[in-house]
Image 1 (cartoon, helix red, strand yellow):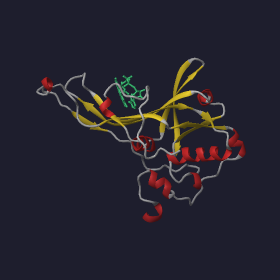
Image 2 (cartoon, helix red, strand yellow; image 1 turned 135 degrees about the vertical axis):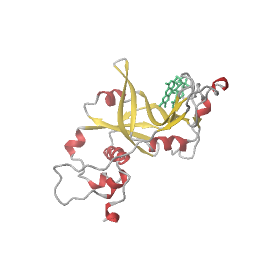
Image 3 (cartoon, protein in one colour; image 1 turned 180 degrees about the vertical axis):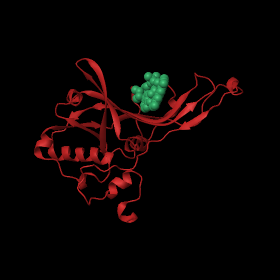
Image 4 (cartoon, protein in one colour; image 1 turned 90 degrees about the horizontal axis):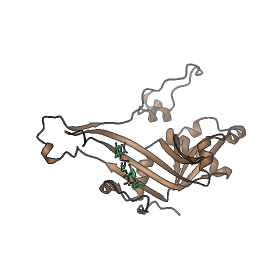
Length: 227
Ligand SMILES: Cc1cc2nc3c(=O)[nH]c(=O)nc-3n(C[C@H](O)[C@H](O)[C@H](O)COP(=O)(O)OP(=O)(O)OC[C@H]3O[C@@H](n4cnc5c(N)ncnc54)[C@H](O)[C@@H]3O)c2cc1C
């Protein structure tokens, strides 16, 4: 069942204890943080010890999909296990007048759930497509589809978005009132992720122009309109 219009239900482990006023309570807030990202961190217990690794992801409805080699240790350790996935955006460095009050402006999602290796072929393909499209919208249909051998070498992990928290910090530093008169610069250094000019593969066949989906991803005008 889709929970797109629902409120994020706080559970024992998703209830924010520190700075709970920074918590977001709409399911839409969770989707906004996830959809704005490309890389998550998957936390899973492997052989009795925690392992947290960065990896790409995609989303279809209320399922997060991760993919990797069939030999990927953490994906397979996660099958049928409780995992924790985080997605973080750093929006600025918050410079206070005191060392103690320095902070970071951010949007962050933490997802808990039982992961499963996806075995249904249609869902596997959809999951792989979602991961690709999360990185570069429009890419899946523009490139060669995976072969059976490539698919056999790839695992897809599904994680439900049913238990999650979202925490967001915005705004200026929160110095103590007695520090406000200190002769120290305070404020926020905004931070944003951006793409550079696409660099064609030196081995690119002559005559292939940069496609629109790459131009758009790089924040440039589509080639077909700029020609
Ligand atoms: C980029 C960045 C940098 C940070 N740097 C620091 C730092 O240097 N020092 C520091 O103390 N804290 C930092 N934080 C905040 C940190 O993530 C924790 O929220 C905070 O430390 C409270 O930890 P806790 O264990 O007391 O969490 P609790 O409030 O006890 O956590 C309870 C539950 O709240 C939810 N939750 C907690 N934190 C987050 C989060 N960030 N996003 C979404 N859900 C969350 C989780 O579901 C968690 O299980 C940073 C956060 C970000 C995104």
